[in-house]
Each structure stands twice: as C-alpha cells, then as structure tokens.
Image 1: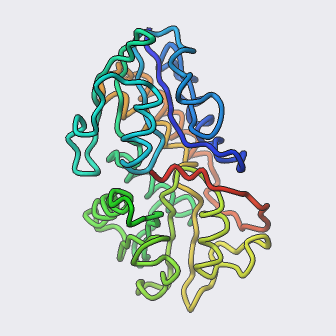
Image 2 (image 1 turned 180 degrees about the horizontal axis):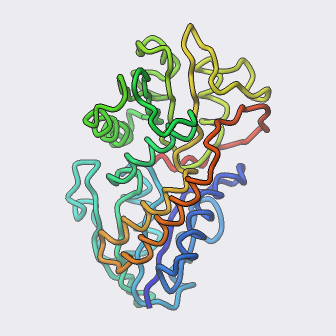
Length: 311
C-alpha cells in the first residue's frame, strides 16, 4: 500500500489556516491517487510526530505544504517523522531545487519518500499566473499589467526570498506581463511601497503564501493602502496612488495546488499519472464553469496568527 502525507504548519489561533490543506487532500482522495491520504500539522492535530503511526501503508510520500526550504522542511518535519539518516545535504539543493530523498522510519517500519516543498516546484509558477487570472477575471491578463509576487522574506532564511524570485524569473521569461516584481514583507523591496516599483496603471498583487491569515488578510491590505482598516474590507481593484491594485488571496488556496502536491509525489516515483490527469481534467472543468468575476472584499474577521507555512 502507498500513502500520501500532506505536511502543513496549521495554527492554534486561526482555524482557517488548515482549510487549504484539507481541501487539497480531499481533492487528491477524490481521484484515488493513493491508498491513504493524511493531513499532518505542526500546530494542530494530527501532529507530524504521530501521522506515520496512523497509516497501514508501508510506503509513504511526504510532501511539505510549505513555500520554501528552511527550518520546517529541513529540520522540524524530518525530526518529527524520525527519518533515519536525514541530512538537508541529501536534497543537494541550491535553495529552490530540492526534489526528494528516500529514507526509513525504522520505528514504524515504513519507507518514506521525503519531497521538497510545493512552493519551489516549477508547477507553482502556473498556480501564481492562474491566481492573477482569477482575481482579474481575465484569462489573458498580462498585456499592460504589472504583476507583483509577494513573499514573507526574512534575513534569517535566504531561501524564503529565493522561492519568490525563482518564480518571478520564470514568469518574466514568458514575456506575458509588462513587468514582474518580487516584493516582501520583512525585507527589501518592501511590498508597502509597491506603487513605487511599478509603471503600469493596473497592478496584480499575488501573495505566495500557503494560507490566508493575518499577513495576507490584515498586514498586506493595510500596508499597501488597499484599506485603512482590514475589518472594513477593500475593493478589488482598489485605487492606490493612481494605480488599480488587484489583490489576490493566498496562492495556497488555489485549487491547482492539489496538482502540485501530486507532481511532487510523482517526481519521487509515485505512480499517479492517471490520478493527475483526472485531477487536472476536473479542475479544468471547474475553471471553465467559473464565472471568473472578481469578488469585492466587503468584510473580514480578526484572524489571529497566520499559519502561513512560509518556511
């Protein structure tokens, strides 16, 4: 038997932090990709430490639902899963190129294919663009539009910015948007000054976060100037310093992310081609039936901590 574990941060304070994890796991269950699919969290139950014991399968694919390589993906998850012989050097990664390594969890007698985070997978580039299409309601969005991909960023982990810049470079190479920028919350260039960096009147702002939380629903909207008080909501697009700013929700809430999880497992050797094809067909059909009209933000509730999974 084969199992998939989706490993995410979760939150003690924000019950919505784990919703994307459950939604993506349900989408994968629906296409029978694995004999078992489990969600596991650092801040919620079921916990990383216990999840392998809940599985009957002897082969397990573990995919971190995190944006970047770093503390959680390199230290916390392998430690909690008790992966024998784990060392971050086994990924042989430059900070964005981790794929997978096969190890044994000897205390439970299982072979674990430990995968790189979803946030650095090439397919995530398509998810970011899809997010821009969805928020503008324009499947061809790009011409005459500035795209800004927003990450957390932190000087404590250079890989946090690398993940954002990796996808920004890939989108620039497509020559679809007038300009593409990487902006951050905790390092330069600062998302607060987004209108200083863009030339186009229309700007799409896509936060590369796994879940919506206080960063995406409180900090960024107020810091950018979409609203003076996040509790009152904001317009989409919002007028900021002479620009129309189309602000999307966290990338991790996009349906396509379930396919990225499967892509990670496939790269590690999982036989999921048929499931991936079925999932893609289902999501294509759902997108075609979507009106594509951007929704206006009208009200938000206090959310608490982010559970953002930005490693």
